[in-house]
Each structure stands twice: as structure tokens, then as C-alpha cells.
Length: 430
Image (cartoon, rainbow, N blue to C red; front, side):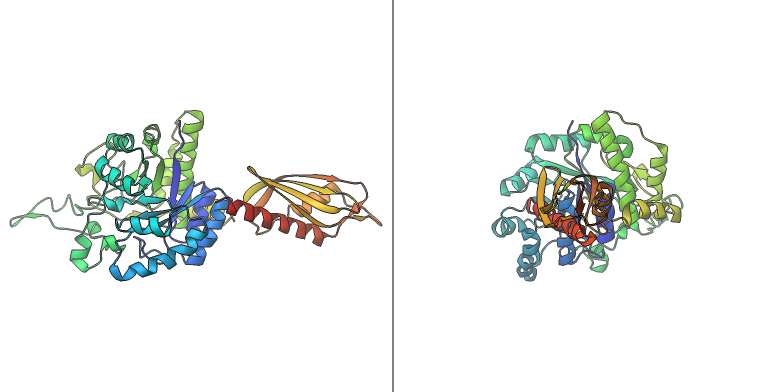
């Protein structure tokens, strides 16, 4: 059984940190331009580079949403916008504009290209056209059934990424012009005014139809697939995507952690036992009134509509506090193993191992103790003071003579040097 990627949203840096801590395999986010959520806080160029470093230290990926239609006057800004991110190991870019493909292949030949759901891919002909042009992953239109998604993957061999949780749009993916017509705010430019969430009066001729029973005929319930997640995993979908770049860090943390739990449970234990407490938590995490499974197992129907109330259920203060403590506020740290060697009159050395990456650094000369020598416990305690570093020791072994001494400052400098060399090695690997 192949474990799917869990892809979480981040509209600002706190959301990114929450996603990493909650177990996301990848995070999708936008810069200050060209993203389909223009109202989100989004990331500066420096913040994206910082996020790339953190993600790669944790062996996670970052996909940039470049998923608006590009105007002619904007093309000259794309290359300088992307170049620093590309040079710092950007893992992929999600696009809507077909014209971007050849541009990106020429300017950024190693950058993986994903076709956004905004491209409305609904079958193998469109998917294979994009594949021939260099696209490696498709985010198909959300209106496809699970059987159609399985066929799309089998017929194209492309990676498939689908939404598993979050807000649903009434229109066909990528084909809504309603917001543009009503107020000049284009969804294809990231500025949707969400007219589908408004109250409408339904008439036929001069008569009102279902005036009291349907007030919001265009507002879809939010998607929640936790109870059918095993079926989606069995289908071989490559990436499970959580909607929500406009939502809070607490939402990102809670939703990501729950889907992480059940993906791991099913793929490692081949069991699937849903805890009602997790369902209840999902309902607290900014869910629009009513839940549904999207189009995976049905094709339209009144049961998909939030007929009377499209508002969100806000999380309570207790839930937010739990999410903050567990996922949002802690610095995301990578666990490493260490071996320190102290021999009198030789340079102290530190070996640090992170996965398959091993680095060795040397520090100051170890002194012979004039009074009380250092103990192994004291060395371990000092090296474990990692503070705001992005690493922490899971285990440290110390090999040392009985008569060694080093100033605390020298041990701190040894740790800092080791972490700097390890960071560079891990980031260069991406």
C-alpha cells in the first residue's frame, strides 16, 4: 500500500509552522503575487526562502501557487519573482495559465509543474496534453467521481492530487465568472467575492419557490472525507490536499493532525477505526454548516447544499488553545543523534546524524582538568541546550577521558558549528 502525500495550506507563516508540526508532508503557499487567494496574508520572498529551509530540514516540500491567469504586462515580473525561490530549492509550482508551461520549462527547467484544479481537467485527453508539455501532476476538477479519478490516473500515469477537506465551490472548478459579472472581482485572478454564499430569492415567473426552505441555493457544504479516507488511499491517489489558505493556524493544525493520524493508521496497520472525538474536533475547526464527501460518490443533489445557513462554526477558545500549544507555537525541530568525543590535548569533536546525513565538526582543544573534571552528564546537558535552534538531540553519546575540562562556551560553539554544517548539508540535498 502506497502512503499518499498529505498536503496542507498556509496563508501565513504561523499556518506553515502549524502544518509542519502537525505532520504535513508538503505545504502549498503563495507569494505576494500570482496566487489565487489574493486576500490571504501570503508570504514575502524572504519568508518563502525561510520556509523552504525549514521544510527541507524536516524533509518536507513546498509548492508555490502561481495559479492565476497572467496578464500580458505581468510576464516580466515572473522570472525575478521565481528565481530566488528556484535557487533555494522550490519543490514545485501550481499553475492555471497554460502559457506558463513553456515559459517555466525554458527559464526553470528543473522546476516540477503541477496543473491546478483551476485548469478544469476532467479527463485523460486534457491530462495527456499537459503531460506532453511537461506537467507531472494534475489536480483534477473537484467534480470528478472517485472512479473517474482512478481512470484518469490509470490512463495517464500522472501524479494525481485531490482535495479531501475544506470549502467547496458551486461552479465547475476554474470556470466561475459569477464574481466577475457581479462586481468585477475575478476568481481566476484570486479575488472571488463568493457570490455563491449569498442569500437568493428563487422565483418562477411571479411566484416564489421554496422561499423558506432554501435561502442559499448556491452554497455547498464543506468537504470532509475522514470517514471514507481508506477508500481514497486504496484508489492510489498520490496527494491528499486540505483546502484553507484563508483559514487560521488552528484550523491548519487540527485538520492536518487528524488526517495524518488516519493516513498513518491505515497504511501502517491496515486498520481504520474512526474516533468520534476526532469527528467532533473537525466540526469545531471552521467548518461550514453541514459536512459532505464532495463528488467522490455522488453527482449533484440537494443534500450537498447548505440551504438555510452557509456560515462557519468557529472553533472555541479551548480548542484554539490546545492547537496553539501542540502545533502552532512550538518551533518545529528536527531530531538528530550525536556523538561527542573529548580527549585531553586533542580537539573536541562532534558527529551529528540526521537520517542518512552525517556531519563531523571539531572545536577547541580539550584541556586537562586542574581541579574538578567534566562529567559525561554535564557535557550531555550542555549540548542539549538547543534553544531556538531547528534541531534537537534525540540521543547523545559521549566518549571522553576521565580528566577532561572545557569551558561551557566552547561546548556551545561546538554545537552551533555542528548544527550549521548539518543545516547546510540537508538544505543542499534539496
